[in-house]
Length: 282
Image (tube, rainbow, N blue to C red):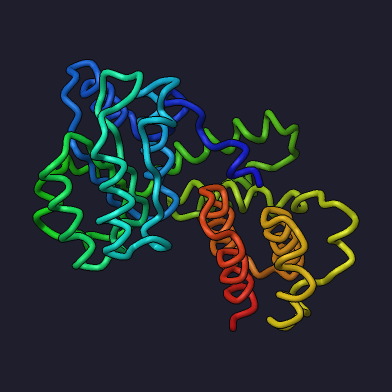
C-alpha cells in the first residue's frame, strides 16, 4: 500500500512536526535522553517518528538496542515483568546511548501493567518511548516523560506529501480530487494516502487471490480458504480493492491499521481476521 511505501525513512522526511524533530535532535546532541510520551490521534505520525528517532539515536546498532512492542497485543503484566525486564537489564551494545523500549498503543495497557512498567522505568538505565491515541496513561508514568502532543496535521502539510507521491507514482489526480482527499482525511496522513490510492483504482494483485471475492465469504470460509493460505499483506490488499469497488470508504482506516500492525510483526492472522470482521461489519 502507498501508505507503507511512502512512510518517511529518516527524520528529514517527516512532515509537519519540525518542532518535535528539532527537540529530539537536541536531546541526542546533549546526550541526555529522556523517556518520551507521544499522544495524538491515529495517522498523525507518532509511531513513524518514534521509530525514526530510535534509528537516528543508535544508528546501525539500533536493532540490538531497541525493543518494540504493540501494547494492544502484548499488554499483560507478565510481558512487562519478564520480556521488558530481561531486555533492559543489560547495557546497550555498540552505542553510547541507552537502550530504548518502544511501546506502541501504550494507552491500551492495563493499570497493573503500567504500575509494573513504572517500577522498571525507575530501576534501570534504559529509556522508554510510549505512543498513545489518548491520555489514558497513568500519571506517575506521564510525569517521568517528556510529553509531545500530536495534533491533526495541517491541510498544507498533507497536500505537500500527496503531491510528492503523485509526482513519484506518475498519477493523474486533479486539484479538485486532492482537495476532497484532504477534506475527508481530517488531518490523518495515513487516511489521506489511502484515499489517494482509492481514487487511482487500488492495488495490482496476483491472479491467484483475485479468484475470490472476500466480502462474499463468511468468517468460516474466510479462515478456511484465505486466512492461512495467503500472505497477510496480499489479503489486506485484496480487501482494500474490494472496499474501494464497493465504495465503502469508511472501512479504509480499519485496513490501514491492520496493514500497519502486520508490518510490526504482530500476530498477523489475528490482525487480518479483525480487519475482515470490521469490513464485513460482524
